[in-house]
Image 1 (cartoon, rainbow, N blue to C red):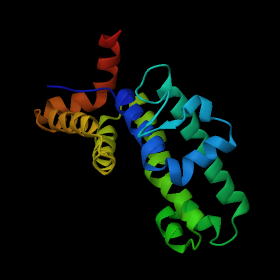
Image 2: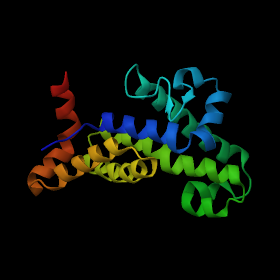
Image 3: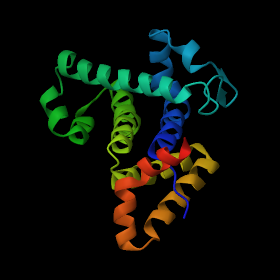
Image 4: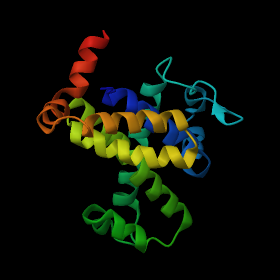
Length: 188
């Protein structure tokens, strides 16, 4: 059985989401505006310097950047957007997205729904050792890795999902509750 901890996988998910999936459309402009590009790195070919892997606190830097963009997006929508009404966003973000008639607003919401919020949720699920939620996020990550041609990350998510779901049901219940904790304990 091969498992990986929620923190490691969340790092790959958020780095690919921010730097590959939505950098040009959304996050790159925010990083420049917030003067975060030296931390997140500059684009060189298909890579961002400083964001090639999880070394040198890249996970922490992208996580802090993702969290700040999630909070900023919520604050902007709730305090500054009048149409569609922010109450719709708070009750049903998908319905709200269908009501937005501005390309920049659509990109902002797509980045929030597909990268920002899953990044926050992955971190929380790993901290709270909610393995079932981590599995759902691995499934989302698998499809995003396919879209961005990150084959090694695809394989990691598939191996994790196969290992979790090919185990005995009673063992699976235990693994969902302790997966991240066990791996963190033995990794030190």
